[in-house]
Length: 210
Image (spheres, one colour):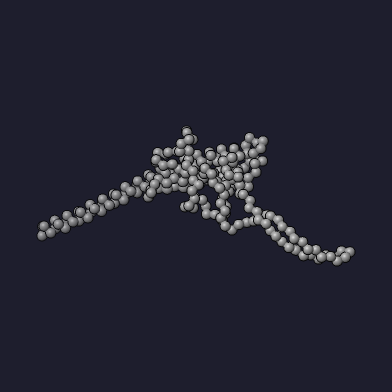
């Protein structure tokens, strides 16, 4: 009986020990993930601040880094029309005429504007948001403020990426003529940081106006 009781107690102690090890391992992973996410979050915030400085610089440089100034390139199509008309004046007459013209036509399909070095034109409403599109490749690395020839490398060992979208559908260069500070320029700044496969990933966004 003593042997049986001892074996049962030993089994119970083993079960409790294994359970404690599993709990400890889970808590360690939770703590590690929390620290990892907090570090990546702070990295992304830093990258967002630096990307907003890029947006401010573009506003002062009259969107020189954007293709077409960031505005939408107007697409025109030819519209052919025929018409008949009757009129009464001092006499009766009948007019026939043909006319053709071109005008901007709305589109129901996605026609994304160009991105260049992380600077993207007006986001078309029919397109998937760029930061949600897994096939989008226009992200640019955030540069080191101390040396813009190098990418920013954070204490987390990763480099945040950014895109800046010009939110005005049109761009008028005359806004910049003769003014030390341009008119109202609106940008959507999006920054993402991924620590690696299976690790924390954070995306932050702001709307910046100059």
